[in-house]
Length: 472
Image 1 (cartoon, rainbow, N blue to C red):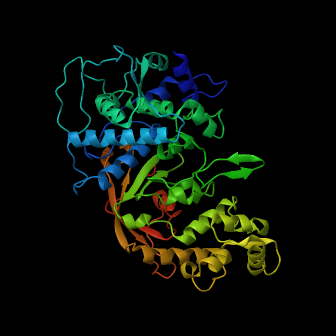
Image 2: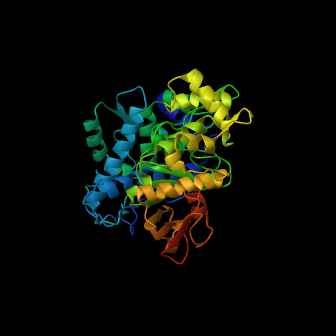
Image 3: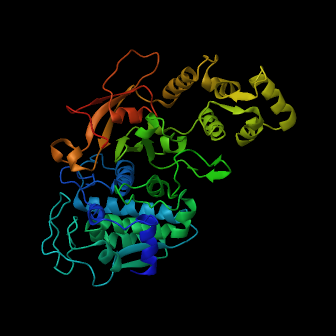
């Protein structure tokens, strides 16, 4: 195993003092990027583990198919269209990884020349017509054979360096069969890592002793998901950086193309920031305790640009890392400066302190702060509770952005066993974003709904199938 390969292996798989990777765990990750036979725009996942790579690719794939194509028949595309959409998506994620690093080149990992392990038969898994391939062009099937072990796999890899974006796109297309074939998921993961740079990734990860893939259960880490979604391998999902006991903890710094919501927030284990909750496109990766799936819609009004009051809430909360709903009054000046709300710091900040903290408690509450500076967006009367103020703002947002009362939504889960009749297909339904003043229309209480309620607290879902889709 080359020195560079060893660095990649250590970053992805190994924890110091561990005994390596089990054969069964590695085998779960050795699959290709293949489309479902029954849902031509959905990628299929064969076993648990690689959802940390497949789900982000699926989210970007849906973005490109839904919003970058003129055809309205987005669920039925040809094999050539599958190839174009997937390769465009992979190139986009690689470009994003390169743009967040100090390098200006791309790295593509493939089989070393003459080392590609062939199989005697090739069964197309794309749902499209079979392609005519000569024996020497034939690639292995998407599922790996037992004889390709961890050590052997990493001994027969090579990397290609690409200098320009146009060349990258050409090379990604030329490697389409490699992405589909055995180990395509790992080839792409390693390509993103080497394009980003191992040193850059280690500088962003919070705990460098933790590998990107759990060596016991095979689940991808949050750093891995963030790397593919944002180009940064940070370990947290909040907005911006936070200080904790003298340590700087890195979060998300820009609005993402696709979003992320997690069931863990409904259980109070974490809080996802606005940059991931409100992406540029209405597509969200959903995280459960063990799996990643994708929720999406075609209504662009769901991701309207951030309003001034939303920006103020986000900035205020970066100074309130424990989500208490208040900040020390000593931080008020910094918050106001960050929002460009102050021109004469000494006089104006002092005036605002006395107005926002009339009892002299030394704290500034979020709700009065928003009401003072954004009265048109947060109402004319503070209701006295954070929940009511928050909900009042969300109701106004719904009206201002034109969010319909009901709109079609879809859920994707790449695991066959998690789908009805073990066929990977989108589950379609209707969503209703209700509010405190709406009639008490309440549907089921499922993990998918609890996950979505971290963004829309009063969302209701009516699925077109007999059973709700699974997060796991």
